[in-house]
Amino acid sequence: MISIFQQFEFTYPNGELFYERSGQTTRRLREVFPNIEIKKELETHQREFSEPDLNLKLFFGVRWAQIQSLATADKDFPQKAALFAQIITDALELDRLSSFSFRHVLGRPCSSQEKAQALMWPMVPDEHKKKLESLSPLPSYTSLQAEFTQGNFAFESRLAIMQLIPHSAQRIGSAILNKLHDIVLPAVQFKAASVEEAVEYLRVQSRALDTVEPEISKKGVEILLITGPADPFAKPAQLTLDLRTVPLMEALRFVADLAGMKLKMGPDAVLIVSDWDDGSLPHVTMHIQATGQVPIEVANLDVAAFIENIRDKHTEEVMMKLAPHLCQP
Image (cartoon, rainbow, N blue to C red; front, side, top):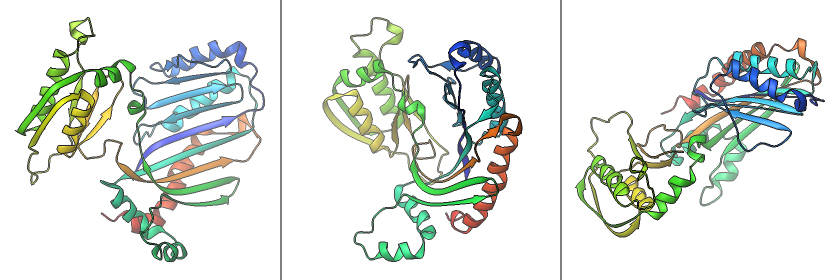
């Protein structure tokens, strides 16, 4: 399993200096994280940032602050979180935190929801299995959870099936959405066409039929075909299709379905991706959250050490217990 999400957050009893020093704090954050962009729609009591690739998000406000990474296996996250915490606490002159916590999510992709369910089944408690097996049809299950304390920290461990949706898939530009619905193809006809041929045809037609966009270079919709590792034993998909008066969005859905692929929306393009771990597949995920005792002096909190201990030591302990199940194909 790989790390797919990490988050460190802390709250504080009084961050009123936010109103005076949010600009100064922003400048310092940009010195450390030069690629971050501020979110345009802001509330008066908080500021939020993200990297252009959407793998890193930062947030700070009057009462709490947070940094999270969606980058796969981000080994540098403890150091990033430590720098982030130092900047916020220094700028807002915080000497005590109300609480702090680290959340770590590990994921293992499955090619289908059924396979994810099968992987979860060995980890369902026996008493739950008996109840579930008496039901027909067998219901789906999504998570198992346990909470416990260890030393000065409260831990929550949860195993779940998640459908991961990258932020890039959620932030769809209104212009591209309008084009996908407004561009209507009079006819789409393929006979034993390759997916590459089908995508290229739709790409060309989207430009030819875009009557709204005045700039030639911006006409149509960018359609990207992204394939995973080739299967030497798999036969290339051959697409046969006969549609009339169909919106571009629906034509793309048909092509993706016939090719056994997935349609994803990005901020500037439509992606047709093969059925591999593109982030939209169901993942069996393990969530670990550790929360520190409150309150705590800022000087006594080593953020990097805290995260590394939870992420590496505690995760390893939990993984050892789950290994007999998670190593299954």
